[in-house]
Length: 265
Image (tube, rainbow, N blue to C red; front, side, top):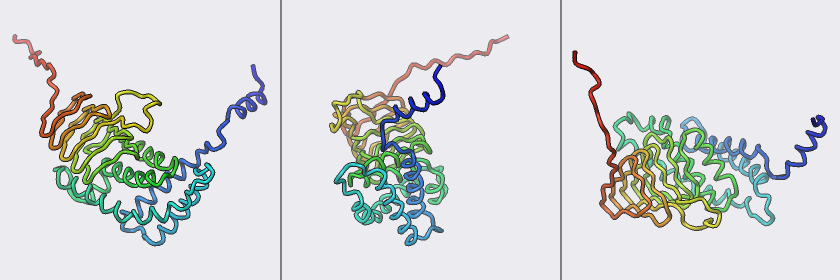
């Protein structure tokens, strides 16, 4: 049996990653929520919050930009220039949800209560940071949305406008996925890779979804060469690893038997 001192030394010897600080995750989550409130909450003053966000961002930069010669401090001003355009895209996303979902009673309900909208919002905000080469923070932002909504959108994906995720729970969208404009996705949809292999890094591993496609619940579409043609409808529980031409209707035909269990006297 090891003594307490030996246990402590053993643990300390195995903590070999000096930049692994969980405060990075905590600060990223706080930054993400503050950014969301700045863009959408009517009671949050924009000017003063932008100043606070800049300070918080610089603190994050000190934690995540440990590689030498990484110009992370210069990212904020460039990112700030992108925020009005990101907000414009998100407002289009929200209005598309209101337009298509009969359960939506107001645009305020979409912003406040729809997990799909929150996941899309954090995706769009994190995607721009990733384009600027900011390490770690974009992925932690997406994980914040993942944990709260059950929707996992890699910040590297390319997603058009508007985009609608209904119910949201269980949706997975991979790093190299391309989704064009006016696509609707339902709960449980996976847009993934055919295999997990480190050698495929920096290669297209996830499908392309062209414009005006609807993908129903629990459909799985895999592979970097898989293209779902424009104006197609993919039914629930479909499994696809090959391309589908434009204007297609793809369905899964299960064998369902219904038997009356009530015995006649």
